[in-house]
Amino acid sequence: MSSQRTLRQPEGGLADGPIEEQIIQMASLSYERLPLLEAIFERYALSLGAAFKGFAAMPAEAVLTAFEYLPCGAALEGIPAPALTAVARAEAWDGRIGVALSPELLFSMLELMLGGRNASGRPWTPRSFTAIERRFGQRLAELVLADLANAFATVGAVTFRVDHLENSPINAVLAPPNSAAVRVTLSVGLEGRGGTLTFVIPDAAIDSIRTLLVQSFPAGETGSDSGWRAALGRSIEGSEAKLTAVLHEVRIGMREVLAWKAGDMIDLGIDMEHEATVSCNGRALFRAAMGRRRNGAVALRVTDDLGEEKERDDGGVD
Image (cartoon, rainbow, N blue to C red; front, top):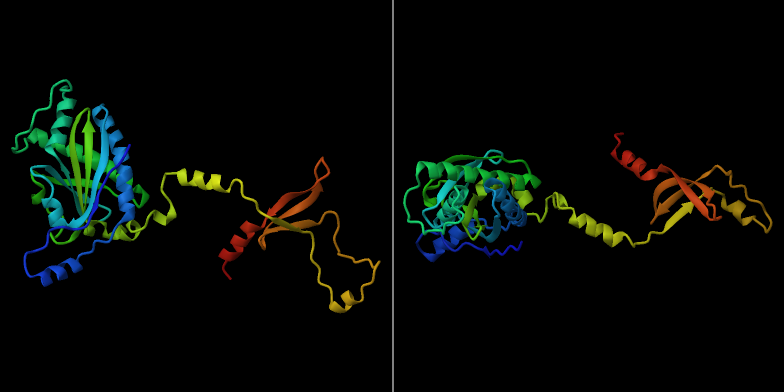
């Protein structure tokens, strides 16, 4: 499934006035990119199609079409109205986000679930949403928010609860109009029909996890995606490592060494049961017993892992 999106810097939301005041106002806003948040929504788009399919028992596809950084007021004003907008509280973040369902998406889903698959879609005339339509829209909003909470599991647990619904996005109160926000737009296709799903996430709502969202991946990992692990494994499968086996080390005085003559016997103080220490690149890895294989080659049998012993020593308390 392809995902085409645009990243856009703020283009509006500034109060009218002298250019100097607008520059100061723009400088006060933070539009730092959030690479991990972008990655989360890219994966969210892939999972959202399956969520819609499970909800309505019909093929569905979601595509991330835009990811924009702009003031919160401009983000809400840029969503075509009317659109049923759910204001949800992110309980773990102590903030609010908005999710706007376009009438085309809401009524396409409602019509298809009521058996109107063979009927041709009719243009929607702008009007107020009925109580039934609002209840269905809230169920739909809760569905997409629950799937969004699962997508955020890579950075921490969060629960989204719908506070109330608005008939127009501009009526949603999420944060001060001039505060920074992110607007994410997804296109949802339902058997040739569908519409758009738009999220508005103020910076204040994600302030507690911002240090994670500015990274490419949390702690250098990609969550449940194990593809990078497999690629790393394939890249090192053919690598070679040089191991050095030291049977024994003794200290001998220089006077004695200088007195050595050809034919002298040097007692190393070891026997056949003595274990060797195996190291790689100067780091002791394990102890091993000496032996021979059936083909006569010298072999080592690992008896003690020195790597674990070193970790215990490093973590000990004096």
